[in-house]
Length: 170
Image (tube, rainbow, N blue to C red; front, side, top):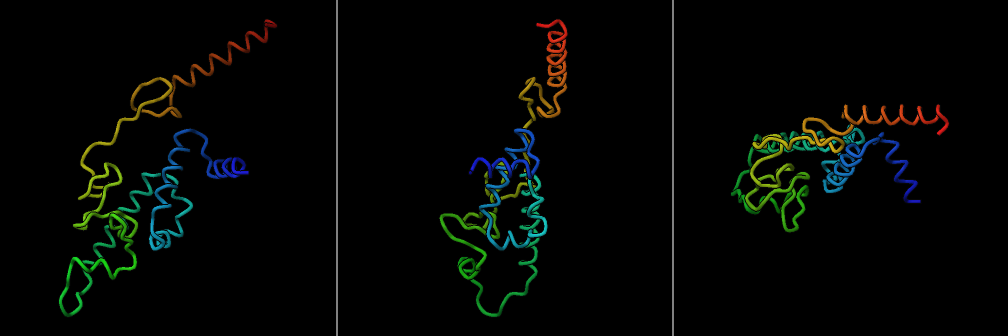
C-alpha cells in the first residue's frame, strides 16, 4: 500500500531520475518544517515548488519581505523590549531555537542559512560558491548524470551490441 502511494507520488511529480527524486524529498522535508503561516502564504505555488533551490529562494524572499515590513511598521507607544517581543508573536514557535516565519533564527534574531547552516545570513546572500556538480556516470564535473553524454554513448553502444547479437542469433 505504501509502495503504491510512493510510486504514484513519484510518477505524479515526474521524478524520473535520482536527482529529481532527491530534490523532491529534500523539498518535502523543508516544507514539513515550515509554519502554517508560511504554507498559507505560498498556497498558490505550493504544489509547483519541487526544487529545494527554488523553495529556499522563495523562503529567503519571504523572510526579507517580512523583516522589511516589520521594520517599517510604526512602533507602539510605550517601552519596547526586544528580548520579549518574540513571546507575543504567534508565528514563532520556541523550542531550542526560534522559528520566525518558518526560518530558524538564533537568540540574537539572526536567520539560519539553508546552504551552510550558519547564522547571520540567508541562502540568497551566501558568500561561498555552490558545490561543483559531479556526474555519477562518468565522474566528470560540470554536469549531472541526466545530461551525461558518455551515458548516452555507452547506452547506444550497448543497444547496438545486443542488436548485433540478436541478428547473429546469439
